[in-house]
Length: 435
Ligand code: URA
Image (cartoon, rainbow, N blue to C red; front, top):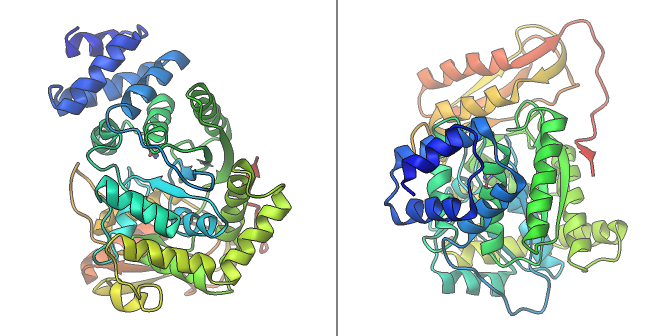
């Protein structure tokens, strides 16, 4: 069938057959279907949705658009994936933590999408780090470090790489079947034995409401089960940035701090431990959640997780002393500007999506497919909701390429802070809302 007929069928609400989906994905991969047609199908799916069967067919066709890896290793092959958020650097820390506990983590990640950050963009702020290694180099890194975080190389779920780049700039990200296929195609191609999904809910997530997040979780778990991949999903809050920073190099710096310092951001730590606990139990490395958490804490405190991170960076072309000297290697923005509260009160909420868009505006994300990003820019010192602030207290610090850009973004960040002048400081909310 002609691609335009497949698009027309979906536009008009007719479920696509397995053959039509397979044919479209093949055309997307070999370049015979144009970017415009990919965008049109994405928008048609956004409005019309897909049945469970269509979602499964799209996922499998995208997974099979390239190589399907398999591993001959002495431990479980595990991964975790986030549905996307702001300040979400969990993968950078958790992959090495699980490797230090005996798992193998071949993590195929994505770039920033819409207002959310991407693990690959973050890692590319490390000089020399190859996010697109050859298959053999990837395998060697996983075997040697226990973890390797890379992108969809030409031969790993290439259809998702193409679709993802188009969705990023055509407002077609927030679709349950498209997110399901995008995430699972990469995970199935990576040859996992188990997957833990971090489904974000809240104003900085693609699924703002709990109900939508739950629907996405159910879609992913059921398509994964149908494809033979045991998967568990947690729903975690994205009502504020997960780490107190958002950007690329700034998040890598925070991940190194998390792996090497005893003082860990409590919110980031709660989500990391909840996800890690599920990974270790799913992979049979721990008998229960409590034992899993104890193993993960030991991996952090002993430095074993930091050492796995170091090995991964070196194996993929980064500096061998990166973890000891990350400040020397990570780029710093030319200008920093504090965002000061204009009045006192309780920081009741952040418009987290607006903070993510502020990072995109700074150049830390993309506005067109294939664009480069400025790794040095972003936000740090983001105040926590529930906290009381006085006028002139720092709500965040903007890292920008120029003073004019810093000022423009400062105003956006200020507008994203909801300060309630009347109420008292609140207790921090548990970010892991549902298991
Ligand atoms: N993460 C992905 O890998 N794909 C999506 O579509 C959204 C989040």
